[in-house]
Structure formats: structure tokens, C-alpha cells
Length: 75
Image (cartoon, rainbow, N blue to C red; front, side, top):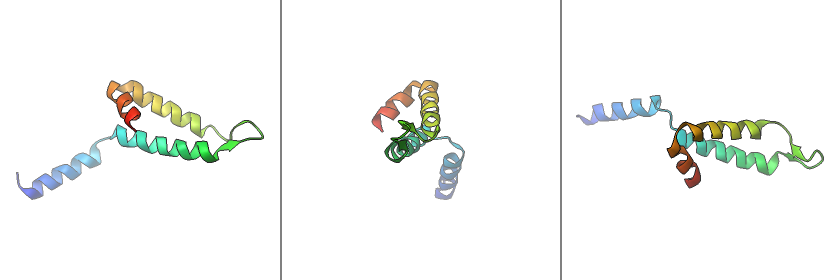
């Protein structure tokens, strides 16, 4: 396979492949920000349901494939 074909194939695979590990990392980073600045001490709760939605999305990804639980722990 030529270098040009290899680069094209690699770019195409990255563009059309859903990387759950990267998505979980992104969600975890967003959750960290939300936990640090989204808590309202007067109400004793978080300002919106954003954190709960992120937790549900993570749970869904972890339940989809057993490898995702390991990937999440490694994050």
C-alpha cells in the first residue's frame, strides 16, 4: 500500500469511527467542571440537570460494551 493510500485510509477511518473512549474522557472532563462550579449551596443541589444527563450518557456507554468500563476506570 502506498503512503498516500495509507494516509487516506487512516483519515477516513478516523472520520467515520466513533471513539467511545475519547467521548467518555470528554464527558468526564465536563463533569469535573460542572461539579466544581455548578453546585448551588442555597438550594443544596446543582443548578441544572446537565450533570445527571452526562451520568446517564456515561452509564449507557459503559453498559454497551464491557471494555468501556475498563476504559472509564483508566480515565
